[in-house]
Length: 78
Image (cartoon, rainbow, N blue to C red; front, side, top):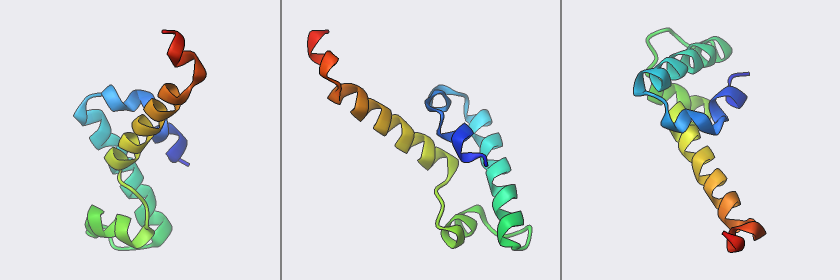
């Protein structure tokens, strides 16, 4: 549900406070989905769900964007 919003590449350059807010929303949703206690650590929550944190997902999206852009045939013309 929130993954498409988080995966949007523009988040890579946003303020740390915005990333933190996205992480809070993602953690809240994971807690509801997994039905774990509120005080479950974010690290443990993501390990249980086998799901990456917001920062990890943004980093992966930026790497994929860079790789796809540099692999494009038009890059040689620049």
